[in-house]
Length: 356
Image (cartoon, rainbow, N blue to C red; front, side, top):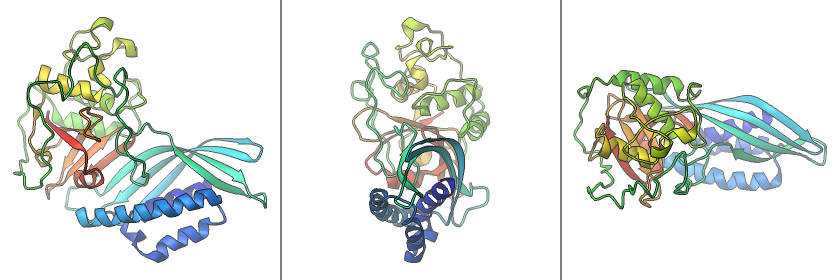
């Protein structure tokens, strides 16, 4: 079952790379998989591969796309119940970039847990029947998954979450005129920034590079973990927490981490709340008017559906020599994703860029 899983996930990754551009490469996997997957999954795969091929073409035009993919499948628990088997794995993948400038990342990485279901065929062999990604995709999904970004969580969420009625702070109700930033690549190129308030921007980036895949066990891991991860990086770079308690955790003027969720501020792990603490109340970040002005250790946030609620938080781990910007985040765990890739994949998103 692991060998089938590996072939399946490698095949999906191949389709979005330039190596998967030929019909021969695509047909090779489909043909080899026909005897290893159920008819229902085969039909779904055929439809998804067409979508992945379109994505490949779009990315190739936008930034060169990916040359090839390397996928490693790490086996977890396997449970067999009669003619049905459930297999848990983690997919660790690298998607390699073409024509990499000196000093730029050579590839995008992602690490995604899957739960796969196998059923026995008529001849008694195992057939792959379904694949469920075990990640709360409030942010952009792994490159070979096609589900739309999830809607913003309910307003009483305590992780990726959002606002509280008592704080009264949302992008649409604030009065300081904040708007999504421009995405035109004609922005002026700034390459350095002065350290503010003794912050160590290198440590912020180092933290993100170290813990993008395997979370720091000194902190809780949230179901939607992107903003929790960014708060940790800010702490590593010198941000100081404010005072706070259970009674003030919903106050967007506070930012603190406690031993329990109930003793941790909404601003710590809620993308929407973090925005208002960082930019408005503490003024620890400054809004940029164009995403292409982001520098290393700056923060980019996204409102995927332009519904007025910020859903996702990312950190810049590299600004390339040619002006490309590379972002790292949790949920799912991804490292050095090109900004141009995100802009192409999510053209309807609203973006909020922070100078840290």
